[in-house]
Image 1 (cartoon, rainbow, N blue to C red):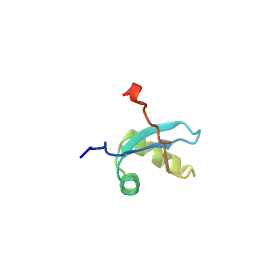
Image 2 (image 1 turned 30 degrees about the horizontal axis):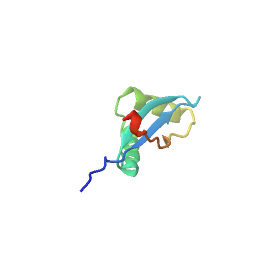
Image 3 (image 1 turned 180 degrees about the vertical axis):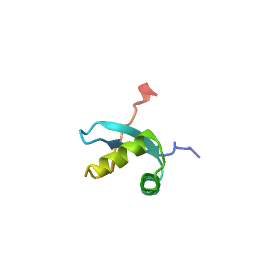
Image 4 (image 1 turned 135 degrees about the vertical axis):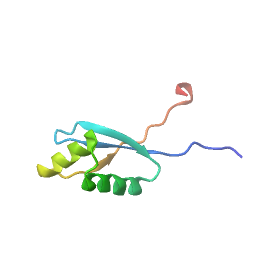
Length: 77
């Protein structure tokens, strides 16, 4: 039986100027959203969570944006 690679979702946190400041990958996107949100709310100190809290305090809406799917050709593998 042929095995296929696991599928990951790539996502970014973006700042108010739409510049990404964190890129992540996960197989369970909904769960990862909950984990990030809980970490932001609980005060975990990392540069990207600190930036998210700062943006939220300024009135921006925090969200994770999924990056479009990209497929490699056989020549690129």
